[in-house]
Length: 204
Figure: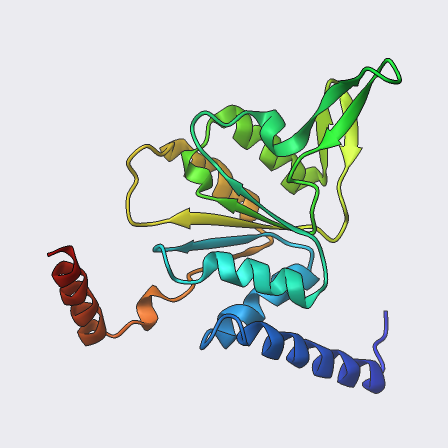
């Protein structure tokens, strides 16, 4: 497919406008925003890997608002079930039949929060959605939106209560996507020391 000069100029202008809009919500992270939007436009997945409080959730919300798409957030815990992610069939008494109720995976921007805390069974359902753009419930396949982007979030502060094997299964699924660290390295050492001192003072 040949791209004309006018089309290239339009794309550059539109992309810059999207970056500028996201930058209003996630300040000072233009490079990260550009990588995230590039991942979205290339129909890939995004692994956000950093410490808590560095803007991972805010970035996902900002992108969703910018493209005027739907968004959802899944907080992964050890007791989460696959149906909590994919949805499930619910019996409709009025029509005497089962009706599929979509789960939070059915959105344009899906933030999978702390996926390294979930069980392999839930992870398998998530990987099917990421790799095949579909979910399977009761042997019935339900397609997802072609424009869906999964933002996988992993906190680095602690590994307590996490499934270490998840890292081995998730990271290869991100191939073809991007692995991004939001901004822990952007915090100067002196600023980090002051923040730690302030936190200790607030604790008493």
